[in-house]
Length: 160
Image 1 (tube, rainbow, N blue to C red):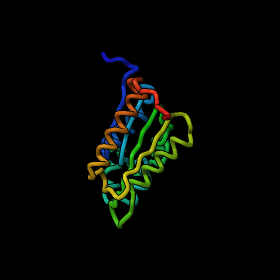
Image 2 (image 1 turned 90 degrees about the vertical axis):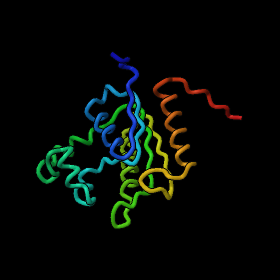
Image 3 (image 1 turned 45 degrees about the vertical axis):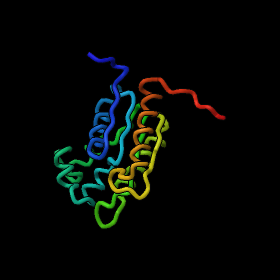
Image 4 (image 1 turned 45 degrees about the horizontal axis):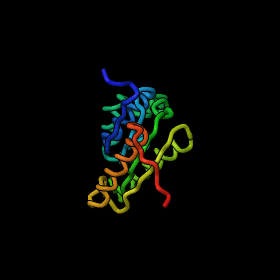
């Protein structure tokens, strides 16, 4: 059995959604998370995204019209340090759904003020970073985040 103090999760896109689901359903188990281009606006997705109805049917088994309380309960406060990333993702009709959803995720965690949270944006990128500099930044940010909150090996910053 693993060390219960050393359980973290990370994911991008659907991996972000799955990591968020783990954090909601097992809030005391996970000590740190880094997610990107995921979503927490499932009611909005159900209505506005081309895959919304099938997505919600798979993950929730019901639409928000059939069981609105199920969707409300799914928005419980998340615990543990979170790092999120967003990119410009024109999914349909030129909308930036993923970036807006990332902002919602960040603001919710920031508003609750119960966990450290950081938000990194990769401007001009589609659903995932394509520019090499953005890919490297994503990796650097994730490594630094886990070094600080998971491994506890963050090096002190040098203000010089």
